[in-house]
Image (cartoon, rainbow, N blue to C red):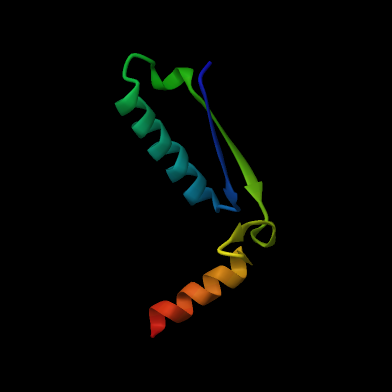
Length: 71
């Protein structure tokens, strides 16, 4: 039973479905000898304020990034 583990921020139901679909497609492209039904995908969610990026928590980083894009 091959396993893929995704850890990241909360996703809505549509995003979760798309993530599983895309990860499965990539997995099949790379390891075509293993059927898609053999893989298990686990998703571990983490609250945004528990994720650090660029010396900030994720909400602060997202805000800074948005400000930079709007300049």
